[in-house]
Length: 239
Image (cartoon, rainbow, N blue to C red):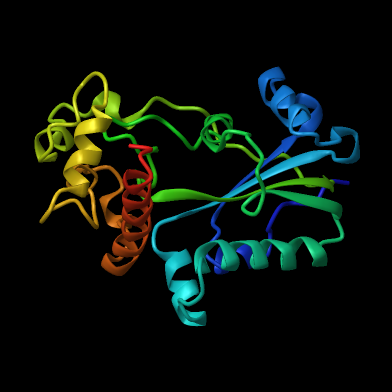
């Protein structure tokens, strides 16, 4: 008999409060083909488990244990998932595809399958519950027997947003009703004195899920890491 995933809230208390469990046998062909192309032996696993976080709980859990090391978010997430799967009678062998893997499986594609993800004008995934204040934290192939978990697909909250405050809030003019002007966004973030160096004003202006907005230090942490990457890419001629 299948087991309910995280029915005791172990992962939720660790801040990983978004779960999707997909049976490998029923994955869309494009996802299966990508997995096979990376050399994964799908016959060894029955399920693909996607985990994420919404809101502030993950950051609060990480801070309680100390924000230290090269990547405390990935470390905390992986350790929490490992501890849960190791203790679960529903799970045998498992393998992480994210983090700590070079798998090319698109987390956004899986987020769409899970019913979590819609595209937004400011290039961050959005859903009706959490707005843009959620993220993918782990992807695991598992020889497990959990009850499949997804949420019903819905329309994008952006479809019903008439004011589109994210567009007018973007100082770079990168956010539009059509294409996202990534060059403008990156150029502005890298500019001296940029107001978006350690945040995104368009994202902050979005009213969807505003009650779940990350804490200020969490926003600075994530955007600080992305800014470091952008500077490195510019130095190496990537952008």
